[in-house]
Image (cartoon, rainbow, N blue to C red):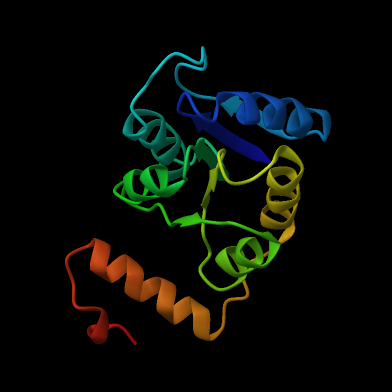
Length: 153
């Protein structure tokens, strides 16, 4: 799977370790942005990963910052991105199966490396269920396009 990863300064260590692990599992991993650990503003890496996913350069994206909140907000501004802030395996599964999330956002400060890796494993192995959830994802796209979601069947 083609994966786009990035982090702000608070998520660099976790993201580097995660990238190495994912490469070892055979994934095609691209790490975007300044991963030196120097202070950076989270909207920049979020935009890089969001654009990679939106432009189909990556199948899925993974972002890590201090809380995960800023990355999620910023990534969701990129057209076609459905970023989800995830804190455990259940929310990772729901984000993929019900919301067809294509960008995973996590907190480096609140989650340990082991839990981050478990969350990523669930996120990557869960498929979108479709069905009634497909209509809801279309409604999200309608909002993104300036349409009334009630107009989507």
